[in-house]
Amino acid sequence: MSGSLRLDRLLANLGYGSRREVRGLVLDGAVTLDGEPLADPEARLPLAPDLPARMQVDDAPLDPLPGTLALALHKPVGAVCSHKEGGRLVYELLPGRWRRRDPAISTVGRLDRDTSGLLLMTDDGALLHRVISPKAHVPKVYRARLARPLRGDEAGLFASGTLMLEGETKPLHPAELEALAPQDARLTIREGRYHQVRRMFAALGNHVEALHRERVGGLALPDDLAPGAWRLLNPAELAAIFAGPS
Image (cartoon, rainbow, N blue to C red; front, side, top):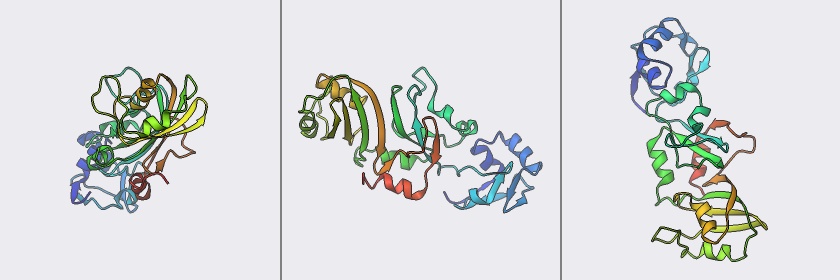
């Protein structure tokens, strides 16, 4: 993000409160830049990349600038990505003020209620569309536990590019399956159709009992990120998304 923005508008866009509330924060000396209190809520600030590291609000670093936030969330089973579903929204796992950010935070694609694992979230529209664009072919890697043992022909059928899902008229793109155990498999897909992984196994007469997304592109779910936890992504991690699995 470039340009400049009034201090009160910046803080309001980041969800710290209404214009009136953030003016109060500034006038109370709660907002500092390079260790010095900022006194004028209407002062214009250059939106430099290092601003969050230099500014503090209530003795905590400023949140990422509008349009620059990107994070990895370990989505737990039971959390939902859409307001149309009943249940706890994934947004409720984030700081409360982030639900007031402008631009708003969105999930990068969706995971259904019963699927866990890596979920990307961002307020950067260009990044979101770059990841989900069919032209990008960003691979997504899932681990599936199945109700019945693998038949043995799944890898070939999934890789053929001819598999049709029920109710659709266009075959799936080729996908890669790795058998890990008789009822345990890793599947890599490059598109994002509705409940795709579950429907792929259903098309072959099997049922997915548990589904976990391990990776998006070259970005793996961090081993130390517990279910329900999140962390901001750095530039190298964002670049890894488009590098593909290592």
